[in-house]
Image 1 (cartoon, rainbow, N blue to C red):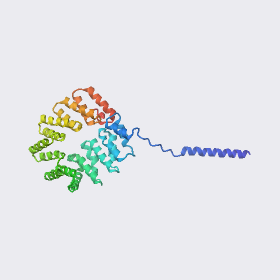
Image 2 (cartoon, helix red, strand yellow):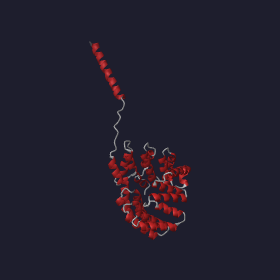
Image 3 (cartoon, rainbow, N blue to C red):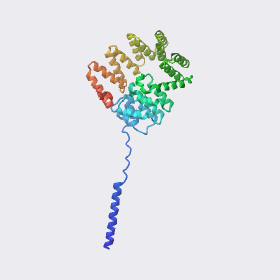
Image 4 (cartoon, rainbow, N blue to C red):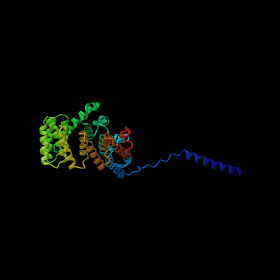
Length: 351
């Protein structure tokens, strides 16, 4: 009987030992994925409105693998206001995403995040992408860069531009294609072809004013400044409430050193399109260049009142306030910027 008891104890001990060994060596349980603390809709709203923590939740959402292409694209539209190494890492990775919509959004984000001098390193390889639309988008992102900034991609860009021109030439019934073709011809100094493309555009869109800027630039490059001015004057007589034309007139006058008249036109453009922050920004920079710093500051303040996420206006206003010694205002804007994006390069560089 003693032997049977001892045998039972041995069996129990062996069983316990095996159980202990199994528990120690069992595969680790896969942790449940941690969902970002902020939902997509709230994060997008936070980024659009420049609220505290906007950059963090924006990065969290872009790091997800379960977002639709449409939602990723919407997030990327906000990313240029929140630059950082993490932002660039996210956008660079999605340049090679499987979905074209995401890739196009990432290209636009890179264009907004990266200075022109560094852009070719990221977009240059896309000039030989298998997707034609991606190649042409890269062309638009690199067009106008000087040869030394294009570096090894200068020849690749030239080849891609020629392919882009060939593709657009066959789209004679597409107004947008003809306008883009005119821009490409203008880049190549093919003035006659640019004029022909603009003529086709006007036939397709006789009431549209988007081509005026291209046409004015073409006339300027041909040395026909008087014709460019007459064109703007004629169009403004026909469309006196066009903010676009007022803006173009202001830029033309500024380029020809007619500063006072230029400011009147630029201010009129802002008056006609008060929600256009690009027009207001241009007015601010030109006011500053003409030593009207206080007026320039007010325009930038108005941009931030309307669009608190507008980093470009915020950084420039900080510089303008520094120039006039308004350090308290500088500290307020810097504090807000840090709340929005603690990794903003301007903060890291001690703006």
